[in-house]
Image (cartoon, rainbow, N blue to C red; front, side, top):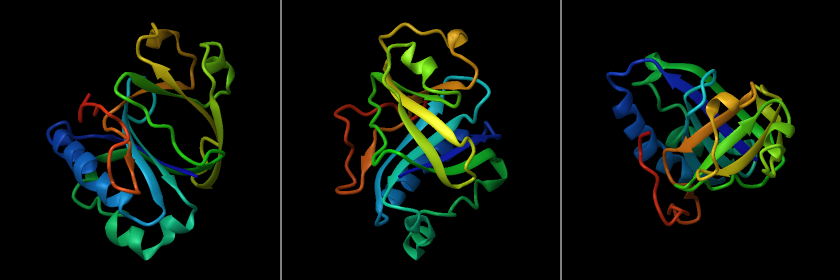
Amino acid sequence: MIYTVECSFADPACEEEWNDFYSLEKLPALISVSGFHTSQRFKALSANCPVYLAMHSISDMAVLESEEYQRRGGGNFARWQQHIIDWHRNVYGGIERAPAIGEGEHLILSEVGAEPLTDMGLTPVWVRAAALEKCPENRWLAKLDRSVPLSLNTLAAGVYLYVPLTAQLTGSNCAKTQATEPSQHA
């Protein structure tokens, strides 16, 4: 299952500090929780969507209900909560692991079907909401090499482009799965 957390941040004065916290403290804490297999953060290049996306591969919904998750990773946003806006959480079924998006790649998500992605020559993976907000109910995701020429103006409504803020962390050894680490901030 894929667990996604999306949000924007309303205070530019402390946004860099919040990004450091999320990327350097929160992700490693989450990936140390039993049942978390991968974690990676992204920043939207597209408009009309939350700015930040965290995508985690988890064993099942019980992981998010566990005491270990609550103690180590869930709900430790008190310091930042007043600045977090447009916050959404979903759990999607359909793939076992989130794809690792490397420094030379983008993540592209569609809420309007596979066709916009297949028209770009991509092979999207379909996921369906299984828990939490369940909105959007369906998503299609794919990797896009950054060398592919793309204008944000040509993306269909409901299709969003993201750049990785971190390499994908894995739970087995808390190591990065990418040989090169994307920058912490876009």
